[in-house]
Image (tube, rainbow, N blue to C red; front, top):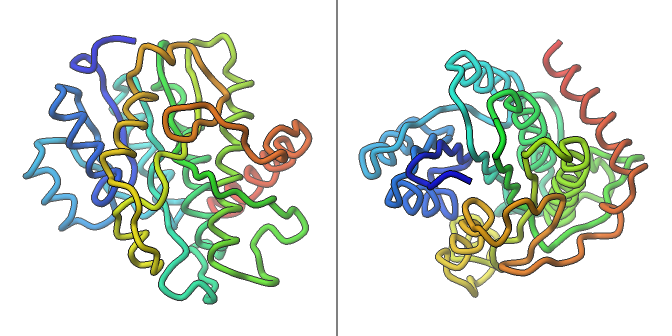
Length: 268
């Protein structure tokens, strides 16, 4: 990889928590950062504080995801790293099921499907050597193809863990498709219950600092020791086994087909 000072890095979900701290660290190291968010006021504050470029889209609407991708593609600029960090936690009321603009279960839509579509659309800008880093979770629950929108027996925790497993499945699937291209794809559990708004809103007590998550993420973004590593799941700074479903090529293919259908339906 080129030095950080020569790289352009897109970080989604950059106005709070891990994303904001990561953007600040990357900018301080001289990287050109494109910081994504959905709140104009928060994006302005981030731009004024760090000097980074900002891009706006609500990832709960796939048309906005598509518009963001098209905006970046029209620029035609190289991307060295894509960090899919944006996410929705279990929520203040984990018993209340929410839907995206497109009528999909909200956590599945934002934590997984938006990243799936954005990444695929931006592949032409990721020129080797390049890296894709998907911020997942050690909390993973088997994805149900009979109830992908979790309409039965809903809980915020189950929705969150299934969405994060879907992201890990996508990571392994895409890594196989890009094998030999010079573009690596890895997933990461940055740290457990970091001191973020998402964790506090869930009612949990933070147990790790955001800085811990930033350090683990920076390693996958720019670390020399992971050069060429792809299709892996990391828990902090060490590789860890993902949920067994992520290892199933048939399950990953089935998820890919479902994802393509849902994206097509939303954009029709």
